[in-house]
Amino acid sequence: MFQIKSIKEQYELKDKILKERLEQLLPKIMCSSKADAWVIACKEYHEDLLFPLLVPASYLTARRVTMLVFIKQQEQIRRFSLSLPDEDLEKYYERYWDYQNETQSEALNRLFDEFDVQHIAWNTSEDSAFADGLSAGLYKQYTRELKPCYTKRFIEDKLLAMKLMEIRTETEKALYPHVLEAAFTVIEDTFSKHTIVPGVTSCADLEWHMMQKVQDMGLVYWFSPTIDLQREGQGPRYYGVIEKGDLLHCDFGIRYMNLCTDTQRNAYVAKDDETEIPEKIKKGFAINNRFQDIVRESFQLNMTGNQVFSKAIAQAKKEGIRPCLYSHPCNVYGHGPGTLIGLYTKQEEIPIRGDICLDYDTVFALELNIQYEDMTFYSEETVLFDESGVHFLYPGRDQIYFIK
Image (cartoon, rainbow, N blue to C red):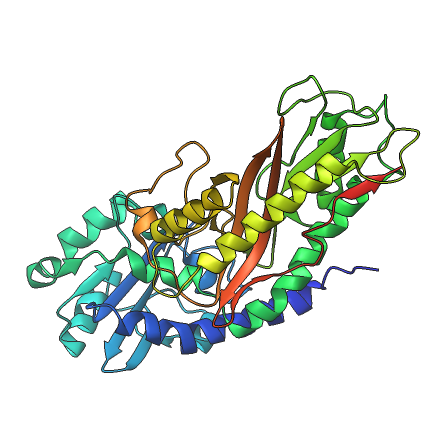
């Protein structure tokens, strides 16, 4: 029986992941940027989206203003805390601010003087929420209080924050199947004969069931789950009371230990005389699975999301598939930082977000649909892209739950 990890286990894992992120990922990401200083500063209850990934598990919110500064020295990264003293934070950062004798901005000026920094990255961005974590108030304060020579050296590099959030550590990669198992505990309980009574249970009933189940597990869903169905004569998506012969479809995602899932699965409610899923549904779903594989095969290191989109759509159409592709990164945030591969409402290359290049050790929601005869087959699987390809993080992507 599935068990959520204890709070102690979760804290220990989060801190192990933090150590890996700071010691292994951060140097690679900063060394690819021209920035030789990177400042993350945020007020209490107005934290940067990057904040939870840079502090220990016990450090739940910023304290007044928490400021973390990374200084690049050749291929080494020095990590400083210009924040109020904190024993747990200082396991990972060198304390630099003498808060009893100087202001925070004076300490930052002193740090920049000591290392003679030339390019100072702040988390400000017009086109990425993930790299826009510095509040307008703090930005105004620092442009006023820092030396003019340093304010002239401010730069934006959205990939610093985005890549540090997007790329998974070794522990996170090993942990993801457990996180998916938590999500599927809910899906499998929902798509079962114990939960669904044809002619009585509605799509909304199942949505409430999923939300309650997640809360009872002590977890959170990052978007409200949705249940819809397809029924002959009712159009592509219908919401209402479930009947025998309906094809059900759920869209569901949780957040657990700073990791998100995003999954769609299908279930068929059998008619009285049926012992298996109808052939038309099996055929349409098999075509959907083939399109999933086409998209997976299109992933290559350093390709943009737009290139993956165009390559996959072209191959699918060549095979006679009627495709719709709208996959996205799924990591510390459900619609997470990284490259977009199409949009549901815009089946073409996407400027800016679609131009970001793929990296290994990244997690995506492989989200798409295909049309077959008069039906639309929706699917979404949480997958990992690494040196050996794109891998499903939980089994059963070719399965339709059969409810008899």
